[in-house]
Length: 110
Image 1 (cartoon, helix red, strand yellow):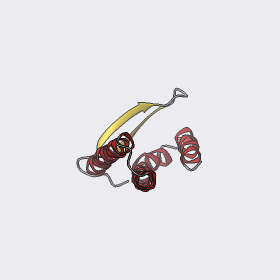
Image 2 (cartoon, one colour; image 1 turned 45 degrees about the vertical axis):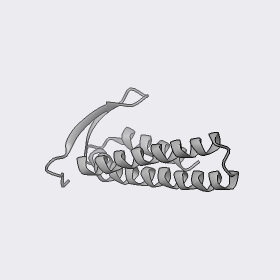
Image 3 (tube, one colour; image 1 turned 90 degrees about the vertical axis):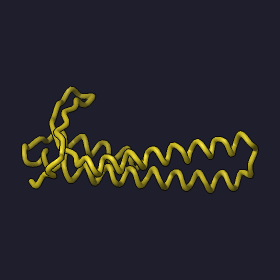
Image 4 (cartoon, helix red, strand yellow; image 1 turned 120 degrees about the vertical axis):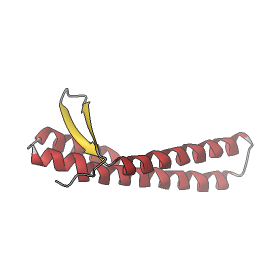
């Protein structure tokens, strides 16, 4: 597996008490976190639109935009996870990690 030179190893525990280590590309994680910040700001501005009593159609359009932003964050995070964590899981034969990502994808796509 090719790792980025500044990739950091992360260890976390899942709800089913399985622990695994994996790497993330810090640049990609930074981009994802920046998108979160923008989306949070956008959602806050939509909340203020509702407080001000702005047109519901305009609010719905902005909510659709926020949903699109969140979908894009999900897509980027999923790709990052597949490219690093799942590659690690396959290399180490970590079938629980593969089951866990399948469960997450099912929930994401509901």
